[in-house]
Amino acid sequence: MPQPRVSVVIPAYNVAGYIAEAIDSVLAQTFQDFEIIVVNDGSPDTDALDAALAPYRTRVSCIRKTNGGPSSARNARIAAAHSGLIALLDGDDAWEPEYLASQLAFLTRNSNAAAVFPDAVYIGDTPLAGKRISDVVPFERGRLTIEALLSGRSNRVYSCLARRGPLESIQGFDESPALRGIEDWDCYLRLLLRGDTILFNNVPLLRYRRRSGSLSSDQIFMRRAGLQALAKLETLIPPGSHLLPLAANLRRDWRAGIERELGRKALAEGRWDQARSHWQEHQKIRPDPRIALSLLVGNISPALLAAFMRRTGRL
Image 1 (cartoon, rainbow, N blue to C red):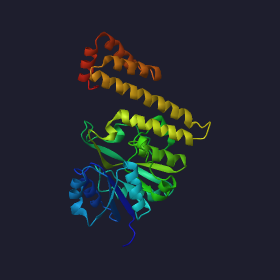
Image 2: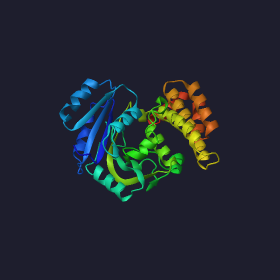
Image 3: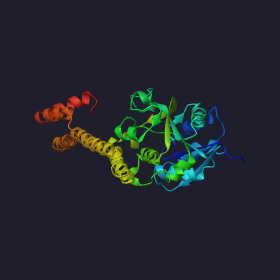
Image 4: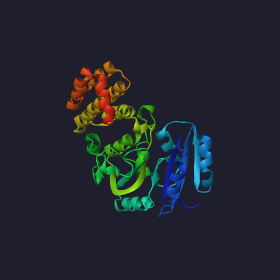
C-alpha cells in the first residue's frame, strides 16, 4: 500500500458513544489521503468500543494496550503511524469536512512550522455550545509563542496537525501521571522552547466536546497538573531567562485558582471553616476583591453567601 500523506490518530478511553462521530468526520474529509489509527487505551468500555468500531474495520487500524493515559496512547499511535504528518483527534471530538485540506494547506505554505492548530466550536454538555472557542478563551493570533502560553494570552491548543519529526525530537508527549490533562500544553511548550514554530489557523475546523466528568472539566485537577508541568519547564529554561518570571506568575495564578475552587467546593458542601481557610490562602497568593467580599459575607452568614453563589452560578 502507498504511504498515506497524513496519519490520523485517535485515542479511545470511555468514548464508545462518540467514536463513530469522530471517525465519520474523518471519512467525510474533502482530503482523502490518510490512514486512521485508533488506540484503545485499556478502556473499561472495550466491548462497547469494539462494537462501535466494527463497521469501520476496513478503514481503521486498531491498537489495544494497557491503560497509560492520553500521552501513552498518543505516543503509541504516533509510533504506529506510516506518515510524516500526524493529525491528532480526540475520540469524543469531530472535524469539519475541510479540516485536513485547510490544515495541510497551512503547513504547506509555512514549511518551517512544526504544527498548526485550528479554531473550534464548543459542542456537548456546556452552555457554550455553538460558540467559537476563540471568542471565549484567550488566543494569540498567528504564531503561538511561549510568552503567550505562560502569560495566559493563549491557553487552548488542541487537535493539531503536526510534523512527526519535531514530535519525536522531544520524545513525544510526557506520559507521567502527574501531567494527565495538561499533556498537550506541556508538549507544545517543549516544542516552542526547542525553537519550533506553531501556528494558529483562524478557521473553526474542530467540534470540541465538553462533557461532565472529563479531565478538562475538573479545574482543580487541571491546575495541579499545570503546576507539575511548570516545575518541569523551569528546569529546561536557561537561568536568567525572561520566561522564568512569567512561569512564576502563572504558578501563582494556578495556586490561587486551586484555593478558590477548593473554597467553592467546601462552601457548597456546607464546610464554611474550610472554605474560609482556602480563600484566606488565596488572598495571600493573589489578592482579589471578589474573594475579600465573599469572606466578609461568609463570616456574617455562610448560608446567605452559598445561596447567592448558587443563584449566580458560582457554586
